[in-house]
Structure formats: C-alpha cells, structure tokens
Image (cartoon, rainbow, N blue to C red; front, side, top):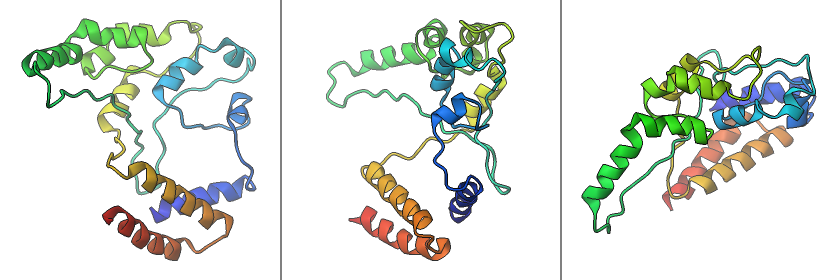
Amino acid sequence: MNEAVKFVKKLNEMNGGREVTQNDFDSGNVAFMPLAFSEYRTYKTYPYKIKKYTSFQWDCTSMPAGPGGHNTSEVDALLMTIGNKSKHKELAWEFLKMLTSDSSIQREIFEYSQGASVLKYVTGSRYAESMIRKDMDVDERVIDNRLLIDAIENGRINPKFSKYPEAMALAENEIDDIYKNEKNIDSSLKVFQRSITKFLNQ
C-alpha cells in the first residue's frame, strides 16, 4: 500500500500536479488511461473520437504494477443468486446453470452487451473475436483473446462487505489529504490503518 501511494505521488509530481482528464487521452496528450473492457468496446466504436485524431493509435494491456508486483486487472463480475425464500429452488438452479453454461447464451453476451463470457472456450473463440471487431476498421488494432482470458483468469475482484463503499471513500479522502498537505506517507498511513480498522470493527 505504501509503495502504491508513493508511486502515485511521483506520477503527480511528474506532471506538475495537473489534473489529467479524459479529454487529454482523447486528444493523444496522455499515453495511458484505466479502461474497463466494456468501455474499451464502446470507445472503439465512437467515430467522433477515433476518427478525429487520425494519427492516434492505441491498444489495450493489463494494468501495470510496480517492480514487486504482477500486472493484473480488476474483474467486475455479474453475480446471480437464488433467493432463500424461493418456492422453486431446483427450477431456479437449472435456470442459472443454463444461463452460465449454455454456449449459445454465453455467445450472446458478446453480441448484445459489452461484457465477456465466463466460459473460456467462448471468450477465446473466433466468434467472440468477430464480435469485438464489429464496427471497427480493418486496420484497427484490437484486444486479443489471450489478453482478455488472462485478465479474467488472473484478475482480482474487489472485496465486497457491508461498509466497503464508506471505507473506500475514507481511504480516498485520506490519500488525497496526504498528497495535498504533503504529509509523511508512512506515518500517515499507519495512523489511518488504525482508524479504518476501528471503523470496520464498529
């Protein structure tokens, strides 16, 4: 955690504290922007953005990590459950299995949404690749199936617990305060760790 905060601080110092916006990326003034796969698919089909800057070519890679880390991406999974008060649990279970294991249904995820299938052989198929390439120019580079499968298999899902949104908001405010007021990162994070632990145990 300390290394990550220090790394972001160095990045902010390199650009002189300037707030980077999506317009900077759109115009080719910055080389990297975190982007969800769904946003990638949508973004690549926006003619007014990809045509406006004809000399601007870009592609997708996993989120970079520091020297001691491994490049990994955040995976945002759509979860489905069966209600414990359901009167038709067995039927609901069969329905869920059909939705998640039927290859024809999983292929439709690529056709009718901006997500990816949970089935490796569907996500790695030529059909999925053709759907990703749909509405793109022939010479446009595109995320390949190997990268997508690697991101899903080795990605990380954010933890979910009752106070997660509040805890994240507190952490973001604390880190912003460290940057703005040039506090000592190590000691500030130690103090914050104690306060966030107290908050979560309440």
